[in-house]
Amino acid sequence: MDFNELNGKIKSCTNCRLHKSRKNAITGEGNFNAKIILIAQAPGEIEDSEGKMFIGPSGKIFDRLLQNAEIQRDNIYITNLIKCYLPKCRRPSKNEIEQCSAYLDKEIEFIDPQIIVTLGFHATRYIFKKYNLNQPPKKEYKNLFGKQFHINERIIFPVRHPTAILFNPEKEKIIQENYNMILKLLS
Image (cartoon, rainbow, N blue to C red; front, side, top):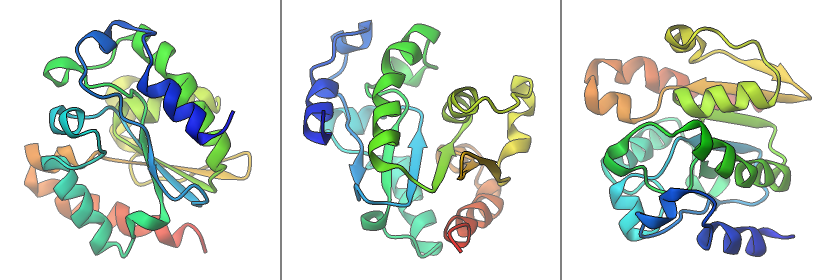
């Protein structure tokens, strides 16, 4: 299987009930030779409608965070844990994560990044589980943001999802500091 086949499978997936309400299953995008992969939770409503990653309100913040950190989208690969819009932006179910995570696992295998940046709780929890990292209680995940975890010659680097700034603009400074660290991890 190659990227085209994988993306075809994602776009035609009917493994869970989300295929009934989505407009587009969203495939990852960016540089297939990237050293950095960023993993968000799921596409938003605008992304679902347009079929592209990070183009809604959180996408504008995401682009600003990347630009301020001197990271170009062309140099990274971005994807989601869940490939379909979650109605009313609800949390993903355990079954949805189980059904969809095989696609993410394949993307990680194909990209083979040095750094996996997880955006927010669900992506972080999944990657921690995948790599058998110690999982804190749910309320303590926020303490992981901005910290490095080394596993299998990779760095796992959890950060807050850009949406956090929409809800609390005061978090932007610390979130930007975390994004600024991403490129430094490659040195």
